[in-house]
Length: 115
Length: 110
Image (cartoon, rainbow over all chains, first blue to last red):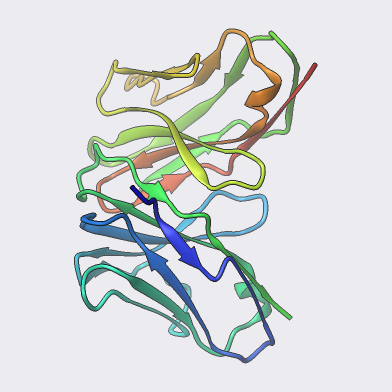
């Protein structure tokens, strides 16, 4: 079975451009998470979906960040008017349910560089 | 609030040395605890987990015990190999999000 996939793997954007990052979770996984990982740091939570419902978006750093999962499967993280401080690796993870027992399966990440 | 503090790196060890990476946590409720590993050029992979107090997680010679009294989940391995060189992340799961430590880089030299 395929794991979590993300695309693109690398993205270079000029400051002010909009970007869209895609995540394909493991089939059947109810929960989907987005994290931001700055260089030399651990992943930091951005937002969480249970099926198509966005249950927590408390980690989104500004209103320029927007995430959706309209059919409860594929998710897109959109960043509008990118800034240099948005440069990071964006990780997507999925899990079977939102039980705290469950591990999260991580994708390879999208490395975003804003020039 | 919830948070994880882990030992700062980098850590450099000789092959067959004993490894300890310290991890302590602060949590509301009863989280599960995890160690994830990130090998060079790869994504995060689960190494081991423990879901309740006094549980011991183990995998590939690594082990960690969920100590509620000391709020700790230290990672240990008796004899490291060059192939263990990676970044190790301690994390806690409250159900709707993971909280990660900053990561500890381990380099094992032959």
